[in-house]
Length: 222
Ligand code: B12
Image (cartoon, rainbow, N blue to C red):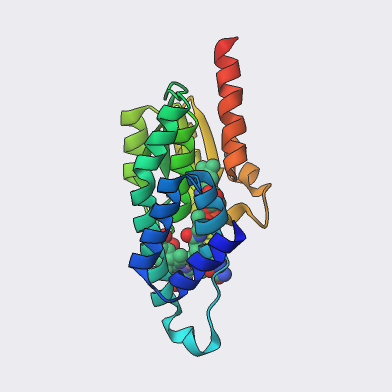
């Protein structure tokens, strides 16, 4: 996997979108890599380990945008392979409806998109709402969709406050009965903060989501 990562990173550094997409699709098509390893061992580190070279400081955000856009294209291209794995493993979306959202001002969306795909692959009827979701839309959507689980993805820790306010509102005003899950880069340095913002649970990795799915399957069978 390391060799694939290095090869991919080289093309990503060169901003070679065509090369990156063709490389990933060829590995998925040949079965040399699956979607989970692609996301967690190649795409996630290619963004989270990103550093800005001293002579590129002024164009750092620009480069982040370009890199994210290449990764986003790859995520969209992976969808047929996700469906293939779901079919191959006979997974049914029978663990309840789940929405993935990002709080207002949270423009980081790649982690949320990946998490949404992970939930889908583990039997949750998943809806990805989007990044920077305005509070009113957030609350309305929950009222309308009535999901069993609301998942809030937070990357920038400054957005933890906005998430706390929304959670309070969902729980108090909406009398929401389901579970509120949170995840994202903002929790990496302080996992316990999820309790302070009123969430029911923190899930971070693919394995966390898989175990959560198994737990729900077990509960449903009791
Ligand atoms: C790409 C990027 C951007 C892009 C985002 C584009 C987009 N469309 O998403 C752009 C250029 C817009 C951007 C903007 C900013 N960014 Co930025 N960005 C990044 C970068 C490079 C990668 C983030 C990413 O996508 N990672 C990949 C994903 C896959 O990883 P992940 O989010 O951790 O997700 C995984 C898990 O956490 C989990 N997960 C995620 N969500 C959820 C949810 C649930 C429910 C579950 C179960 C799991 C789960 O699943 C994923 C897969 O395993 C990081 C990191 C870095 N080293 O620089 C900075 C970083 C996140 N950004 C940062 C900052 C400060 C900003 C800006 C404020 C400033 C700026 N640079 O202009 C703005 C803020 C914009 C805003 N209002 O939100 C800081 C945040 C620090 C902090 N305060 O917390 C970072 C860490 C950079 C740094 N070292 O300072 N950024």
